[in-house]
Figure 1 (spheres, rainbow, N blue to C red):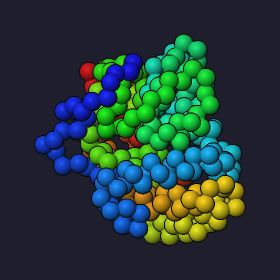
Figure 2: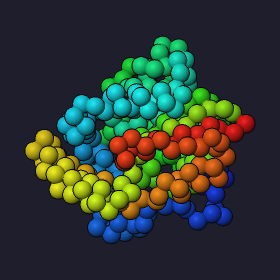
Figure 3: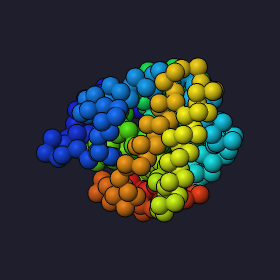
Figure 4: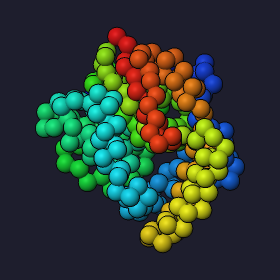
Length: 260
């Protein structure tokens, strides 16, 4: 399932301008090279706190939601899965329960710190980026990416890679938090994510940079490309049956099927 990493026309088409998930955020970084360095640093630094803060913020509901989303996307027993941006393994843990012993899961993430936190049996871990996956063509039945769309360098290139590594008819699930449609909803979520969450993180975290990560999360959520743009990019990459399911007005589940 693994191949050496290399540049390819599908992974990074030189003729195309990269499709950023949001405009640069000068409060955190300048250009895209600095953006990637920032992401590696902040995720490496806060990896040990990540699961603890997530449990507090989700009130313990995260596992049930992630498993339900995977089921809605069509993940079945025996599937060969690639989990992009595996992080600490929150989505992968629920995927493993659904695919059972007959399945196989490969987790990909650019953060060495996050990969060190993955404590799951039978998972093959690989350092890599969504825009150049270290996986062979057509080797996966299912590909998931949980809450990492906002951290990509090129949405177009990443979606092309997702289509490349999926078999014909393979299924895709991209989980993301989306800015609420209403101004009031946006204001409430902004206040929660930029004020309440960093305070909780400061109290529960061991690393001083953890509150910064959660403020950064909101800023990327607020600036992220809208759902219609995500759907159009998936269709342009060759996916069919592209849909968006929304929970609680902010949790987006983008699903699609790889075209033969």
